[in-house]
Length: 94
Image: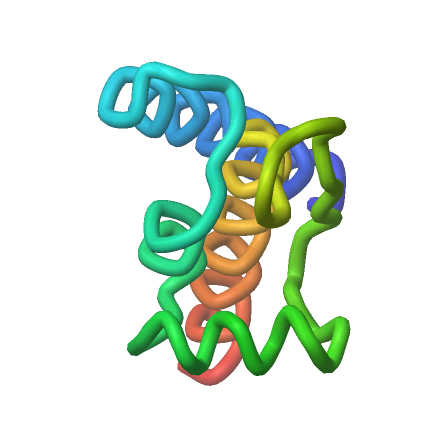
């Protein structure tokens, strides 16, 4: 069953990555776009998580650029993992 879940995560992550790339037209997200993709209710909440190093995905800086960036691929994988695990937990509770 664990293999199925990993396949489910992989399949969903791929679809989400494609969708995020299509919406934002870039392989990286930062600022408000990253905040929205990660589901933070406000830019302040996102910044607080960033300051506390509590973001659920790796972030990095780019030379001569302001802010922190995350790869769309990492965001998609995190979202897919959250969704698949939540589904699995809901099935267990039934």
